[in-house]
Image (cartoon, rainbow over the protein chains, first blue to last red):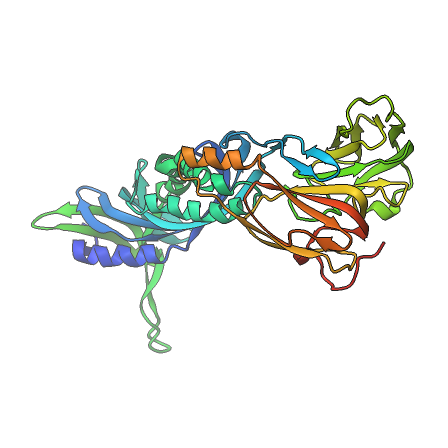
Length: 267
Length: 215
């Protein structure tokens, strides 16, 4: 039988893991991906906020509604000639007194490629099952929750609002383009339709998923050799014990508990 | 796309027109806008023949020349054009870099337009364009450009039709016949210069000082 047993119920486990998750520093990533038909570069940072803990025997900590707060900078180019109709100024003629009729040639406008930078921020949620992993490394016992499988992210209703943010970012860029005024609404609508919520989540999903799929939650950390009684005097030395083994599990009786057990021996 | 209102630097939606009233060869260069002063090579030619007797109509003929750029230098097609006395040549084109037509003779220069010439500009953005002469004369005016309501296809079609309507501003003897013009986005104004000491049509916002432009 183990010499030390520690147990926490779900309420306490919530507090414990809440603290552990809060201590995980913000994570960041950058790269490029497809934003609808456009190629976007991105830099994104994310922080985790704990969800609701459910302890499931024999060794699963389920975190429901684990929240990932993220902010990203997207940069992408749009070749306007692919989304706007060809536009040509027609021949314009004037009659100059004593000279005659003068006409300008038909002039076609080449729509340019525009670059757009959009700062976005929002959150996604995921449900994650974490198994308990115990390791001894460098004289330190670590008990961690390691995510099992690939949690799927849930984009909230606010994601659709991000399209409006993109539209607001595109509009001033478009307004700087000569002759686009009468086509402005058409251009913005077309770009947003091409991206769509699916395009946005298609880009953000794979970017944000690794923040959760590789997640390890530190639950307990303890030096293998530790002092149980301090030095009291020259003839009363400190007392140390060695933790020989640690086990962690979820036990279910009248309530679910996260249980840590340890075997110790004199140092 | 360059679309500033400045006859000294011609953009894609601008034209420079020049009439030639005497026979002869008129050599010229196409240079980046504002760089006419350093042009020393004049590879293009307007060959003006005295064909007045042969011509049946008294009406002048117009010859359109297309300016293009490979990103390093400009070219004109055709490089040599033969016209009759009294005909008008119109240059248009370019690329991302605005250009100027710089002739050997003083009267023949889009940078500083003297007589029997013109400058057209299609206004690409709504706004009030207060223009004046960068060379310091009192010539000035304002063009009010407003965006059309193009929420429906019918409105868009109507707007497109208005783009073909010409607007003429005559400049002669130190005066402008229309100092205020109201148009819609995309419409063109043709500034016809009959006789001046040498002027430009330049958006006031591009002029950082109140004095005249050099050269």
